[in-house]
Length: 284
Image (cartoon, rainbow, N blue to C red; front, side, top):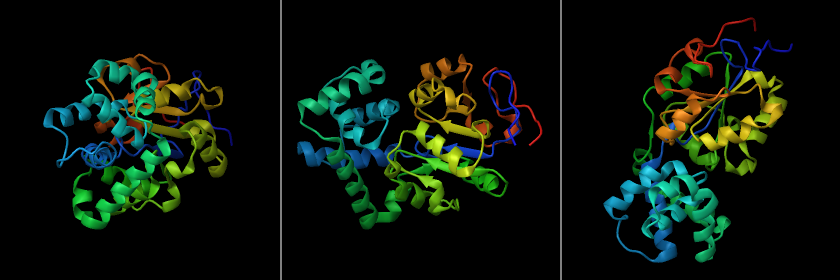
């Protein structure tokens, strides 16, 4: 049965049938682990010593975290910071200017960086699993809320650019019993827009029955211009890796809804709409 939709294409139902969640920056704060794994890769490539970058560089890296799209870019970002790239420029132009510039200058390859990044994580897990787990934390209330959703009729999927097995291990250790088949990592090798199309087809739902919670505004921006995805609910996780300017920008957008952690952890009926009202109830 076709879902009822509002005049602006959004699904007015009180809850989705599919809730798709990003992992880093939505479910889990992985910034500390990312930096430590990044430093290991950085040392392998550039031969630096020490247990970590200088404190001021580490602090800058955390501020620049919103510039990253996938994990292998992290050593490139760290290199850009150490080379003195202005922070404002990195936030605005890392993907378009600084990343390709440093990759070319240092003859780097994305596949090699990705393999090194995964290997660094694997070695850390084998050497010190408790330490690896402790370097990452689920955002407050996330575990309880996702467990509650799993007890309902809503199907939860994790769509992440992280290796799926790492995300699944963290979910398992934090008491979130998500089936392995519901954790779609970078091994799927598809943009998230395409993953939503696959979800719709495999789960036999309408696009209006899918809500996506993502912390990267550029990812949501890319989806809003694809006509077939017009009915998907797009939510920006305001607690994740994004900037104040991006949250303000999303707040003025008719298609993207900023969502606070408190709202996420509450009932679906209280989630805001892009027009500032609460989502309306309706027939299922």
